Image (cartoon, rainbow, N blue to C red; front, top):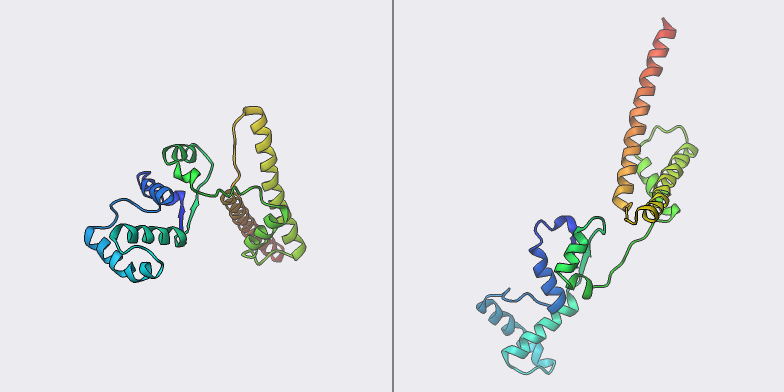
Length: 198
């Protein structure tokens, strides 16, 4: 499995090769003549046993078919912004030769589960009920963003996306905020206790 995210694409020229693999199953002139001869030589017995003619062209086609059957690619691109749209126009194999999985809104229970995972880092919450309420609030915030995005689309005729990354960033920010608040509270409590002792 070959996984490629849009953040790993430093230059769009790299997508020329991905487009070639998706469209044709190979990259032209990828192999030097001696490498190609080595591949054909190694595949000759297997190709013969599969009824392929013993000639370089058919054996190479057998190789390409084998690559197409066994090479799996997972391209992870965000629909946010113009980058995906521009790349899809420039490299049609990204759309025409793939199965697209659009990931939709996360269900509330999944958001609560992710929030609980983030909140595990904060050990000093008073009880499980508070942890659960904070997780539910984090889920509510994320779901309300989706509702606001729908209203924004109706009013402005433009899309805005709340991605899983933005959800995890929000959870992380909430954690940092809770930790800061706890430290500030402990400091004030410590000062109050010191004053009471005096």
